[in-house]
Amino acid sequence: MKLIYRVSVFALLVIITYIVIIRSGNGYLSVVLNMTIKEGKVNRVYLWTNLSRIRCDMYGDSNKPKHEIVLSVVVCGDRVQETLVMIKSALSLSQDSKLRLIILAEEKLVQDFIEKLTEWKNILNGSFTFETRPVSFPKSGEEEWKKLFKPCASQRLFLPSVLVDVDSVLYVDTDVLFLSPPENVWRHFDLMNSTQLAALAPEHEDPNIGWYNRFARHPYYGKLGVNSGVMLMNLTRMRDFGWEKYLVPILKEYKLKMTWGDQDIINIIFHYHPECLYIYDCSYNYRSDHCMYSSVCKAAHAQGVKVLHGSRSTFHTEKQPAFSAVFRAFQEYQLGTDAYQYLYLPMESYLKQATVSNCGKVHSIFLKQIKEFVGDGDYFS
Image 1 (cartoon, one colour):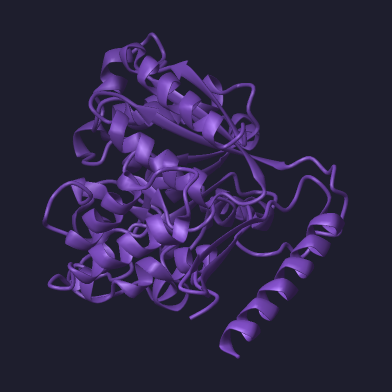
Image 2: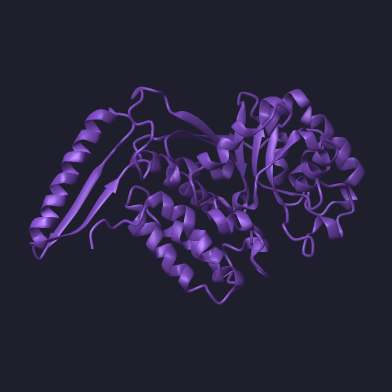
């Protein structure tokens, strides 16, 4: 009877899937049934969609163009592999948008990106585009800007003029991983008011361990400052605002008082122009500071971590094993394979081995968003 029941349920599922495919057109839903039959029973059925779930608007215009998300990153030195893992996380979880990657990199690194991203583009049937551009600083003070904080990090300050043909970007540091679709961050552009030209997350949640409120010798945004690792930038508004005219005067005045380079300059600008900044919560830029002593990011507890930031090399050391566990899972994952079996399950396993740390004790928050995206993977017991 069990076999008859399972076969009947599977047949019904196939019929429903066929109807969905017919009604969804050729652009919104791609369904793959992978059934393995052993010992006379159905072991597992995977329904894989490009959204990991049926879209609410699947009955709309099937020829509607995908919304473009522009993801930008700056790469110098030995950060190629780290950057590729970041890009892989974005591609793995991207939903129904056309992802456009703009990589600003040293010339010696460009070929590595072209080779790997071309390979991934073929695997994913051209679902994203990419372009490489050279790192570029103003000729006046070029070397000083290059060496401010970390190599090339201050390039983000000049994106309004470097990407003069681009309206808006989601800028991320190389040591960032998406644990939810990039669309979740991008949607905040629609929530900005008419004066806001960028979005950032707070540097800290707890004033007792805050850096800016305890140590900064220059102005900063709000009570605790902001972190620049995950930054939405409306470049058109920034150009209209005259963003880059502030950079040199701020550097001259505060150069000897800054610790975090370009991030400090961003804090100084928004200290004097708070009306220009939109703040999203800490789940969009979750760092070890949020859990290394105690868990302080309430949004991540409620909704899960959306974007993980491995600042201070936490992806590559054993100081924060939960962070390195997530990075390892994405690093090992092969694009185009089942995300539940080959990404989520290994990540869950690695995180369970990291529970000795304070961040590891709250490891479920690293899995919450990605589990929602890939589903539970098993529809039949």
